[in-house]
Image (cartoon, rainbow, N blue to C red; front, side, top):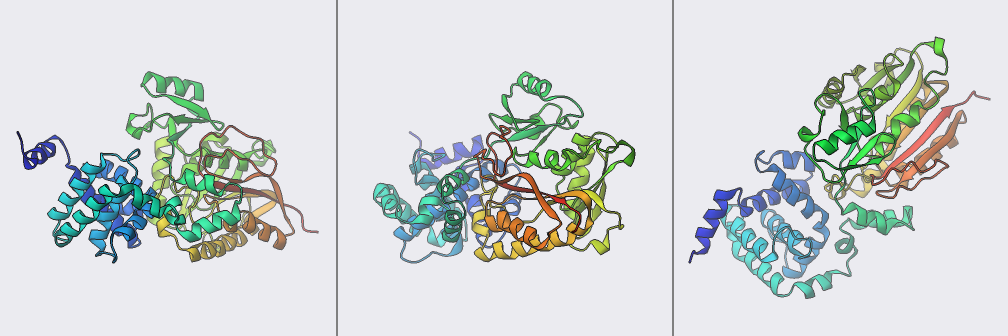
Length: 457
């Protein structure tokens, strides 16, 4: 008969021990609580442990509201940050046995082991053990006691829940539920190198199943590392959500080939990093049909545009500059089309970035709306008469979408709203303002408004 220490050593020999993964998950959670983005927090995890820790971490972030409510039931006072992060990590993973990645008893046992092995939590190991053992004994009663708390029920901040109820009174519950699911991996086939049926066949040959979405997309039934995708390194496809794949065709529809002798269409991608929409514009247009400037204010992020274009064999003029200050970079020649994928709360992509809901503050929405209005005002004069600007955000909040465009139209009599998707809610496939359903399938939350510049009267 082997004792528990022998079993622990045996599990360590087979792979990263669970207690170590729980330790690192709690460290990432503490960093996110301190204002660090999830991307940065998980990038700090050793590469060999990162996939497992990130998977655990994402589940913790999706159920953090419930975990914090349970911790308040178990402890009269909030424990020190490191111990609290570890305790909430265990509660988020174990509160619902049907969704737990391991048996709740195993999670509790390994969390206590994690507390003992970390000098920063060793003093609270007995406290963590007592709380979690009580949780195992009284789980149903404790969970029921937290069911009445909206933050525990929906796992979003209270202000976020209230804003969604106001903005989308018929759909707010569905949006919140969608946010707590795992987003699918969706590909955009590079139609300059092949067509969707051919690439779907290549996926099948590689043992990967996918279903068509959007105009040139394929949604994988199971996510895979990009290295396993056939032809990815050669540019045969890109990873891009189905809703994001609407941007390029919306902007270019009707512009290409309208005046054969007028030369290439001048296009500005105003907030271009990491370059997915930039590349899609170039793929759709074909060689020499557009003259594209990709703008990005952050030099490090602009290098991701270069990497994206290089992998796909595409070319654009990449400029590091502030889109809100055209005098620093604009040559004075008007653009036929401008894509403004504006900075926003990212409230539409919470499935992919579950940290966002906990990092954002209610005041961020107003501040970002002011930035969006400033960018619209700065870029609209750069659009030629008869040209167009596509405004989009990956947000479900109306302040960053419909309300923003309503205000813009009220102050710019030379702007006309063309048929546009409007607000697309996560997983909804819903369409507004007269655009037919393009079978987007499962997708993120987005907002689109296509504006055309009219002659001033």
